[in-house]
Length: 239
Image 1 (cartoon, rainbow, N blue to C red):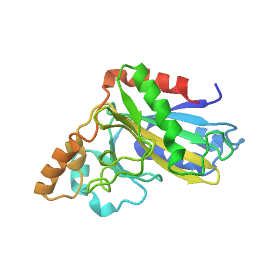
Image 2 (tube, one colour):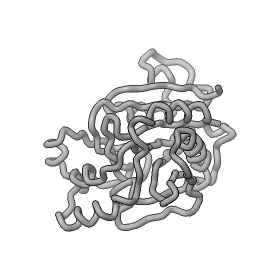
Image 3 (cartoon, rainbow, N blue to C red):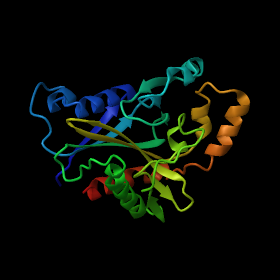
């Protein structure tokens, strides 16, 4: 297998910092805490295990959208990732989180930002179908936006993301590109409970209720019991 596979566990903020450092060109030693050594020679897959609850904001989302009091009351950290997109609520057992990094000379690299995620979605779809998820599709159309997509990652739909037969998002993908490579941060929800995320945002009660109704059919969880097999199947089918 040409992929380096790493398994990390820690606070969501720490995991995001390490992934950001990896795509920024930090050495393997910095990531592993072992001193300076050569950068990774090939693609890297990091299976992330968050031990805390965190509201993860996209790179351009404003802090003003966050209800800090609600986050504090519910023990939810507020974290910002370097990749784009809307907010994701990361809780132990609720999300399968895998980061994929390729270098600019990797055969999977594409200068077309829209097409660059297709292979990521295809690998996820194959892994999920192997776990018995049924008919899945990789979205290869343009970005689909709506009133809620600037707030919530799973409200919209981007190229490479995986949807089921009812076009509910199953895997969300955000991307960060630097001269050192491209980082694809992938989230596959095991359970979809949008109200838990919306309760952490600054929204009038009537808008919160409306948003919850709209988001109920925007995504679908794959079930916590499938998390382990899906990860192993994904690692096995990475191109």
